[in-house]
Amino acid sequence: MTTTRRRSARATIGIIGGSGLYDIEGFKTKKTVTVRTPFGSPSGPLTIGSLAGRDVAFLARHGAGHRLSPSQINYRANIHAFKQVGVERILSVSAVGSMKEAIHPGDLLVPDQFYDHTKHRRATFFEDGVVAHVAFADPVCPKLTAALAEGCERLGLTHHRGGTYLCMEGPQFSTRAESLIYRQWGVEVIGMTNATEAKLAREAQICYATLALVTDYDCWHHEEEAVTVEGVIKILTENVAKAKRVLAAVIPALPIDRRCACEAALAHAIITQPGAIPRRTRRKLALLLPGTRT
Image (tube, rainbow, N blue to C red; front, side):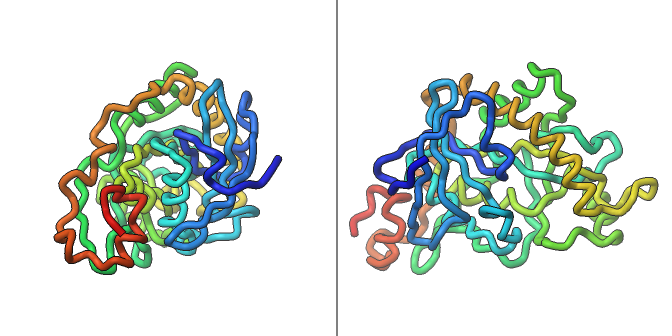
């Protein structure tokens, strides 16, 4: 494996996940790519390779060895790094807790909504003299989520299509009182990362979808033991094997050309008058706003 700069390696499909996803059957690693972004360093280098003839870039969300907590992840740098190497679609794999009896540990879920309950995240690229309001009523790419759900179905895996992912700050798990309140809100699963990624992907005009791996019942379920790291990791390990099968089935089947609203998310989103945007900010956002002069 070689290490290189971003200009010599490209990929149109990105995967965000942990180290367990790097050995997807049929994935051939080409190189690791160290990417520098205007928003700082991403969680680590991108691993770029091919899967069934498709160029794919992997990123370990929490860094090598799982060093970064959900609040410490530089989400802006992660999404910008994907944009720099040409990624147009991101498949995000994430562990979640179930908030409903019918969604069992070990199941997979493809959410179509997010509730952002975080408190300390940088969740926009547009600041320092420029304002953008992207449409986010439907926060995931419908075509990409459909592909994931259909992939689960083809493989005969127990899965749930649609539902709300509540994104909490973490890194602590919920208190029992919090968990019971979230249940009253009617959400399906709870996690700590994906709403932030989805917001930034939309601003970067990248299609985004989540494959959620259900590891536990959070702590609302009185007949189950309270959530422990050991318990989560045990079921997560089993679910990672399922996720790898889904990705290996879905990625080769994605159409080369994407035709969805995600690719034009900024078309009417920039509110700031072009002449009022500071030059330094225009330079920082040059990749996201290719028509902007520096």
